[in-house]
Image 1 (tube, helix red, strand yellow):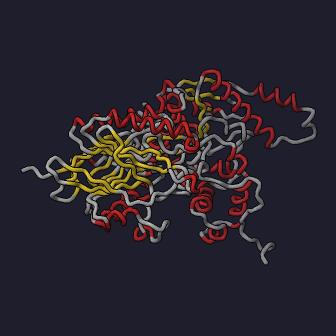
Image 2 (cartoon, helix red, strand yellow; image 1 turned 90 degrees about the vertical axis):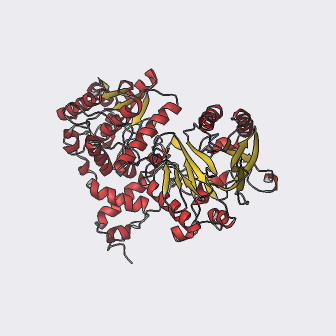
Image 3 (spheres, helix red, strand yellow; image 1 turned 180 degrees about the vertical axis):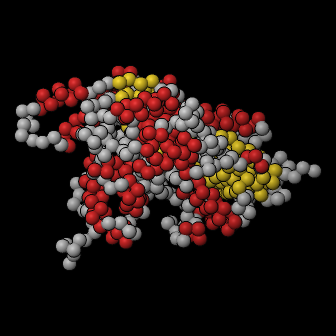
Length: 588
């Protein structure tokens, strides 16, 4: 006799924020496919109907009403033999009494109707999250039951994203008063479900799986975790949905950085989940492989969801523009990428040769626009006003702004997405030109430190990781990024023989200081204790503080670390606080 089972499926979807009809169609298509395979219950991600994060769309009454209408229509359209959990918004009837107006919710759709609504209990208000702005936390322990044809019942507990992230045994502390997973375990549920929209950062999947494993083992209950995939503005969602059995073993892992539909069963005799052994998709073998996949997905989705099919990039012959060009080529296709070379009298011959070699390796089209004449025109116009002054930063920045204007003109004229090429190290210390090289619709590597840029380019030239999508073919020379770009000293080439090292510490030193300061929140004194020179630390701290006005005017940058200069970065511009290391002359 066949043991009783509950057939389940995980729909790892890539919604577009606000595209209610399109997102509903994705859910419907997944449900139809799952129903044809005999699935009884389908899971979709957090806020799968509207996409995450919808931000201030949530304060528009028409948007909330349209979501309700779309949800009811979806319930009507779904196959009658399948139940579907859909992430949605539910109005809070107690908002006139001082509560927040909405709940972040999950709707159970079955037999043409909304059967139950479950509310998110823990609302994150850190980093990129601002859910307390819109939502009221739910109070109820969320459970429901599915009855099988033979009369057996399976009790399931529903949690939403952050509800999973408050295990004091795993983290060593609690961030909230309640632990929804422990509450569900105390109710004796057979299976815990978690519907998430958890943004990507380097190494995060390993943390997620460790946390899920700990929770499954601690409470002796299997856990299904479904995550959103895709890029939404500066945030990238990696998918990598997981099912853990009660022994903390992974039985399902969905594809990373791609939509996916995975199937599994809850076996009532075992009291556990089972799946085909091939349902465990491999993860990228290195952090570089993760980051490459995230950046390509981020550029691809930003372009697609904003209505662009082509990109333009300024090619300097340097490593940053080389990496961005490679990302754009993988995301959009070589025939959709234009590289523009804009040599000045200070541009070296090898930089032009390197840029052409890169374009040949990638198979992208190039245009060359020399800017010497435009520089002369600026010199002539400003001659009287600048009389008696020396060549300096203003003149250097004019070159960058000329290039920025040319790139924006091309983008406007032909409908290209301009990708800016500045890295995180430069953006942190302000080694970039406002309205110049900072121009663009998207900053593709704004959260990638310079040392990681080099690492990614070397990885790109050597990796054949089968778990990484969007790999580029190597050239006949066996490389994607020309070796000359990897080995020459970095330079902005805005004056004769200029090197980045003229203005900045070496990048190994700079990036370590920046990581300690920005990501780990170490004090300058702690950074000195770690082995860095006090003078260099003070200088870097001052540069980071003074560059805030530039970062506020930068294009959105794809987030790949725990601390990016984007949605989650909220520093004042007009501030006198600069925490430096006391020097002997200033010490008390």
